[in-house]
Length: 191
Image (cartoon, rainbow, N blue to C red; front, side):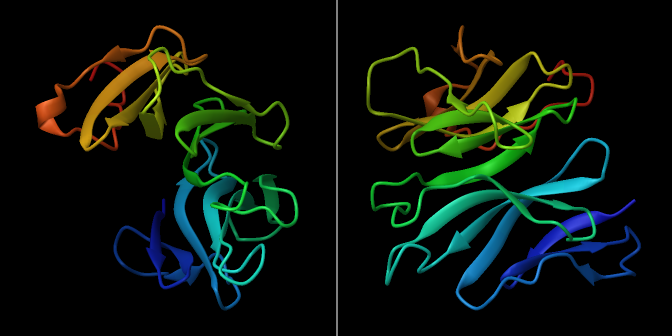
């Protein structure tokens, strides 16, 4: 087994005993590969690629990319058309999370959660069941793939919510005063 870790602009794998450090991605200058997540079968890794000048000088692009676990065959699965970027008519993307069956990815896209098939097809945004001003992020699939936990922000307050995988029936799990964020499921899905 290996661990994933981010250091500098790329990310690495390492054995649990601290040996075998290996760089997986080698981004060019001005590009950062961050927030990696293993696919359930261990054959692929999804991550966010941030390119500081991806759509022009000072125009950042944020893409979701999938590579084989050895770093080969990078494939962009969520990205903007040329000339668009995170704050230039494009989408700001964040943490990607694999569904338990490895067929889909959930990730933050601007103020919502988006889901796409692992090859980048069938991209859709999950609905928000409350009026505007919400920012949803940091999705985490339940072990059975039926639910997604995420953090929701309203102004400066944060709480953890859980919704069905289609975005319906969202319910608040933590109180606003706890300032909950970045949820993760227990292996049996009960916590």
